Length: 448
Image 1: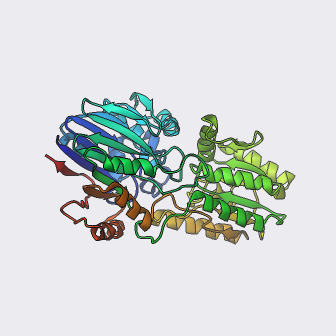
Image 2: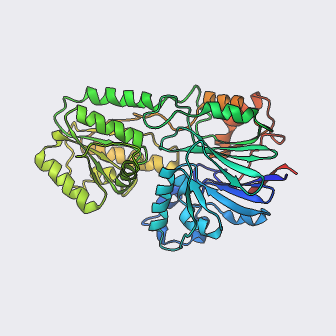
Image 3: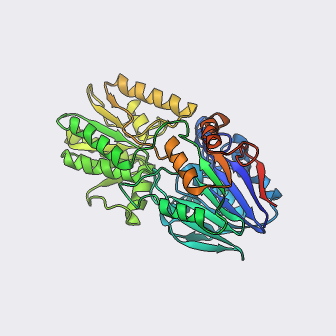
């Protein structure tokens, strides 16, 4: 059987992931993501009203025109998890393919919301829920399997396409977490089994975000202990404390809510995306928040809540807000600019339970946000976080477990690929033979 791979997006920079695998006459697309930084550098861009071709030209979504070179029928569109760099282009591109969108329940719910907000295209693709550990037939000779992984969002999987030539494992995005705060540990047992079954692993496509960092990525339980230590150290402070993290990081939001209660403060979630992700997770029973936890996304509701906090005393509340990357319209950025009823005072604490995504737009915005907060007297507690991506030893373990015939680095620039290429070559792979350093829009023929 012929097996070839189209590397469509995410092979020149972080963001706008999209890869297609053709096995015989069957094609499966993995991810359709958005590069948010390409949107943020423009003022007041509303992607939901834009045409896909304009977003492609902007570099915001994958250029999927290379799909016309794949001689087969798309049988499934498979997003690995609910981050925008993996699902953000579904509302712009999925309608071009007569195929269902197959994902885990939480991811499907987020895809639904993306589609609902779309104003330019009508996306009618069937939405199919599939749990980690389940399989689906793809054509007559191929099978799709979901393997549970741990990441900085719940319900993440690595999809595996089983072909007669061996398995193609799409490894974006994960860390090896054996003690996650929510959900099951990474299923390393299943990855090792796949390596020993039938023809083994034909190809492994891997996220290289942290490949240049030594050691292993700590568990989310480590971040939880770090966060608890920081919050206990300031629990006697009788002024304002504000926290921010990734809205999609439900495990971290859960920890913030619990520790706020331990401190005797009322937690409240503020910002549209904070309300969206946490509300969805609670509705699907992934997390059990306190009954009195307020979630407010609409600006008027948020400002009313800020007024209430100022009237009843900042010392009684912990606002958990959007804006950890310094996004211009996010809640924390507005607070820094003095555009909300919440007034920061000298000594007030701002907790960033997130790292800056290493990209110039984000780094500039975050720097500006911290400076604005500091000018109002805020004290910054930074980097209370662990990454959702593998470091060097995690990459070594995955290659050792899977023993793939071919390896394709993804989710980075050429510079970002370099440490992973070094690691793979030290393990016996060779660029141009079985280690494929590629670019967006390329095709890689694995078997003929």
